[in-house]
Length: 448
Image (tube, rainbow, N blue to C red; front, side, top):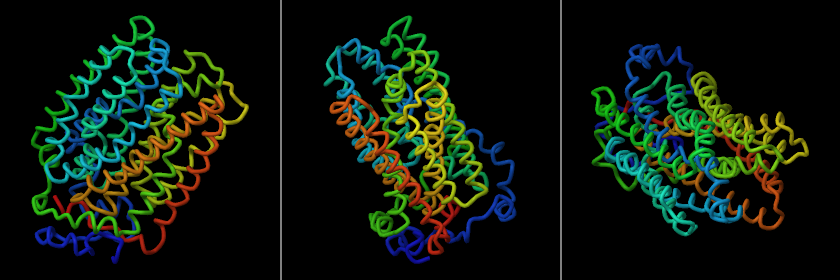
């Protein structure tokens, strides 16, 4: 395996002497995997619905939800407090915090398990929403709340919750991860039109309080499910966690496959700065109405759900490097459409949908590739490091957006730049199809 799998790295050998060493050859279809593990066939969803539902609820009701609700509240906050659009865009610099917080959350999850780590953010997220609801017009105060929320609630992201799903599912792992990752956009699709109407009638403060109550109830349900017998088994750290060596990082960082994925994700994620807090503003910049813009946010969320499901099904059946390349190439067309003079509702809808499909697909592709090449023992550690690349890209994207808006008042230069980087990133994923990378690392079941 050379540098293509963790089993060949001396830095991991000491912590894995008690583990059963198994290897996967070239990517296999569900039939071959089902034959190898007949007990993990179509009944996986019936047997493991509790960890699946727990992870879905947890992801859909915490930090990942910011992607969808920030776009709803942005125009109201900007109008009431007199903030400029460039100031709001600069808030995206908070994404830099995930470069530190999410890798730490991922590492802690490998060491202490999903349940312990996720509880920290799940029950504090609603409190941060209440703090925003009661704030004054200081953008500094909002920034402080947002930073604290990002740092603490990073324990509720896919880096943490997807571990329990990847550990439970073997044959249908791609689809299971897709279902789990669909929770935030599904929540966003349901909340966007409802909250837009609610905020228009009752104000943005009441809107934040309402979302906080919903998220608190979901957190209670999540941890009730994670405490069940089936879910608890996969929500715990692996048997070798206590012996996990700092050499894990050295082994991971010397793997070419890791750096291919890291750079590809950085380049491909520059367009997704729009999704975090600018989506509705970009649509309004096309000359469309507020109501149409709100519906576009819902369309983006629905497309994200479809992207996760489609990519999950594809990953279980097709070479993962091809699925990744196609998924991350979709925004190129969407960004070019938004930058074009075609600004009627239909082309904007197509553009937003393509970006949404890719945004959703990423949440499935990333954990699947990590599980395939690195296994479950260091799943959170690797996924956290790759998520740092995503955070860095989105932070840089927000800096570019702020600079472009301050200089030209238009999103177009940013849209063209992001299209070019997304195209380059999608091509890099094709390198994973080279012969040296076709053999994956140890399978997840070797570390449970």
